[in-house]
Image 1: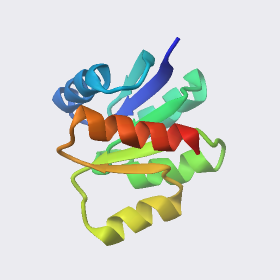
Image 2: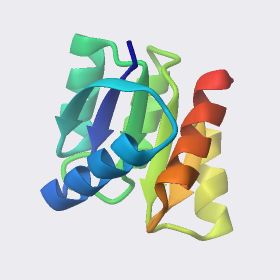
Image 3: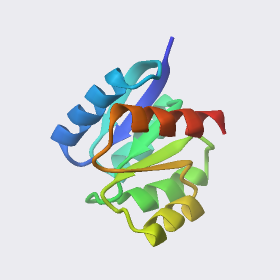
Length: 122
C-alpha cells in the first residue's frame, strides 16, 4: 500500500500533471486527494489525514504559505511545496513556515520522487 497524497493546486491541469509525475516517480503512491486552494486543502488534511501533502504556493482563497502555517499548528504531515517561486528567499520562507520539501516547477518525476523520499524520511 502506497502513500495517501493530498495535492493542492488551483489549476486542474497542473493537478493532472502532478498525478502523472507521481505515477512515473520512483515512489509508492496509493490514494490521491485533490484540493484547489489552501482552505480546501486544510479541510481535506483534517478530514482525511494524508501521509503527504504536495502544495502550490500561489492560489486564491488561501495561498500555500498560509496553508503550511495553519497545517503546522495542528499536524506534522510532510508538506512539499511545488511552485514556480524559485527565489532562494521564497524557499527559506517556506521552510521557516514549516514546509518539509521544496520543488520548483517544472520538475521531473525523478526530482519529485527525490523530494518525496526526503520529506517522508524526515
